[in-house]
Image (tube, rainbow, N blue to C red):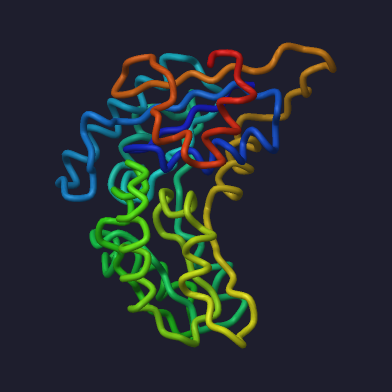
Length: 262
């Protein structure tokens, strides 16, 4: 089995690690766009164009499914990606985990990029699923970029700024950008209040990985003793190794350690 993932940057690592955990025998293709970063300030038309280019680079490797491991691309480009690639290649988008977060009661905070915060897309999900649960939208300017470049000081500063905007009684935080899942425990530590029950974080990586494997179809696992599955890394269409910043995170190190391509 071969699963491809696409994103503007290294936010796809979280979902890729989940694919590897669920199917250690799966080959993985990671396709990102470092030349076009950041996508957030771009127009929807530009995001769609770049998403199609990144997705087609991945599709050329003939995967069994493609995960759009990017909230921005899922918001703006998912219909175009599906129109271009399906039904031959199943395309799985990433939706903020608002529904499971509010199912546990509230209050709930949604951490997302400024472009996503307050967007009709996110507001629609809140209206559809939140019901009477209190939901606070928290913009996180600069956090995705800080994670992308493993800028430790900027990560601390942007998380602290977002935590200051998060109501103290929040019991769950939705991680509305795939990059944020790479620093989930740092977010938890910043938001958790002493004396309150443990904060619950809701990411999308596990759900999209499981859905991609379902869409790809049941395949037998590799036999014992088989060679480790490969990892193909495409950076704006160029086949290279994982960026150095990716190895800062446990997900990136895990992918590199078990892949013969690296």
